[in-house]
Image (cartoon, rainbow, N blue to C red; front, side, top):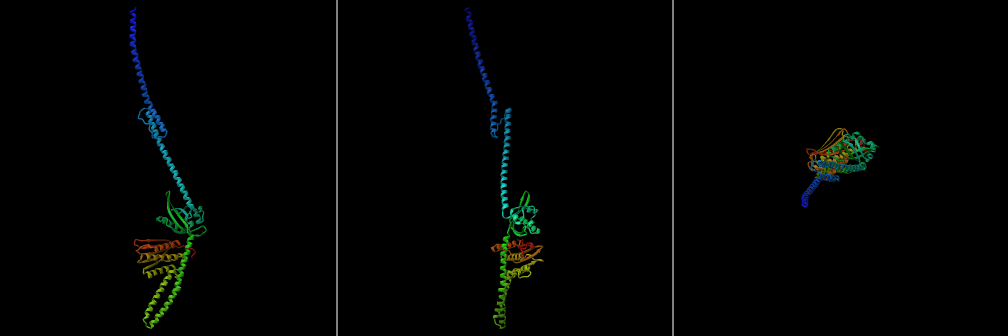
Length: 455
């Protein structure tokens, strides 16, 4: 019995010693497995949640307005595909946003441009309506007026509704005259003479003739060409100028008559006495007879000079055939005084109905030949005048080869000629051809309707 008990105790202790190591290793193994599972789970969770977190952060960044941000991943799983879809959506949204911004910018620029244009139009319309000069805008092709300002209605004495839509002949004395002025205005613009002033006459609603200066220019709008004309009423100015011209002509006439009736008669008396003295000395056969003859000759020459001066001062009053005779005498005087051949040519039936115009045409010719002698020292000159229907053409030609219109006196002469041409509504042009011949041409429309009550 005693022997059996120790054996049992021994066997039990041995069994316990065997079981304990086995449990320890099992626990260790279990712990290791658990740790591996936990680690693996952590790694897997990171692999899964990382892209999701990045996707969430990227969505917040993109949602805040940073559309350039890319979530981007090259993974081929669902999250990678989703991230690429989000990137594409942000890219599309950025493109749309840029388009919207550009569109808004373009809209703002257009609004600004329209505002600026509207303000400019308002300023132009204000200036257009409030300017003191009459402004007509018409279709360059048809001549129909499409707009005018307030000064226009005051100038022609018509309402705007009675002007717009009509042709320009509504404010000219005759249709033919209107066509002449319109064509002349248009041609000056086409010849690159925009802004060059010319003169005309218009008729107001109360049948009063008014003098106007005209400046015109062509402009294009939406593929159509328009003519803008600025009319300035110079009626009072012309009246004062005419008064000054009348005073000048009166002084010319007065001086001419005084030369003729005063100095001319005195020289005639001296010439008679001198010739009587010459004859008496010749009868006595004294040597002084030759001196008396020379004195008589000098007196006769002085008489001729007075006669020529008198004709220059009163060209249209002392000759019966008026303008033609005066021009003929002018050419003769050029030859006698300056020793320059001067040919005078004229057509048939050259009569000028307007007496004031006839006088101004002569003065223009007189100034032109004087200028030619001063500036060019010509070898030959020509004065020509002709009538074509109701148009008078006066031309002065010279072959002078020295300086052309250089001195102050010559420039003043040109201003005077242009001024005289403007008074009678004529045009004045100076041309030089290939043969170095200077041609001055004055074209005057001789219409009784435009006469300033001078007939």
